[in-house]
Image 1: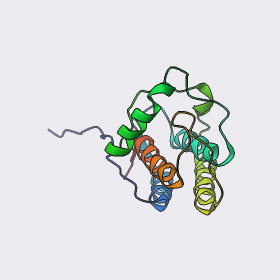
Image 2: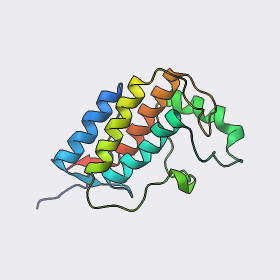
Image 3: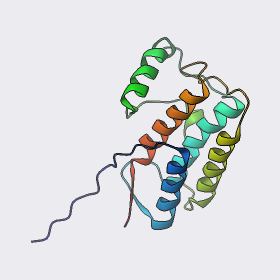
Length: 156
């Protein structure tokens, strides 16, 4: 009797934005199994919201009742290298419905990764954590990307 096991969520840890770039390119090229609610395109769109926000400013702040805990949450995320799952976020931070083609969202995220790498000016404050150094923003982005991309498992 042959048994098949369902794909498991990946354990990802990115050390550089190139790691993220390679992962989204590989998922797009090879296909993927979705373990969460979002497609690759939706995941890239959501991640892009935060890259664009730190570069251009955010349109929405975190809910008022979460802001007093921002420092505690940030320290926990940076220490563990992991983000909690199932967190409710404002609608402005959610992706739109799936389009059926992930290519545009992948390309847009890759362009934002390059823009972040090349950006020499100040970065906008996080809507939950407040002002962050460039290094902290970069680490937080890598953790955020690993969190969401871990729900997409390569098809091969």
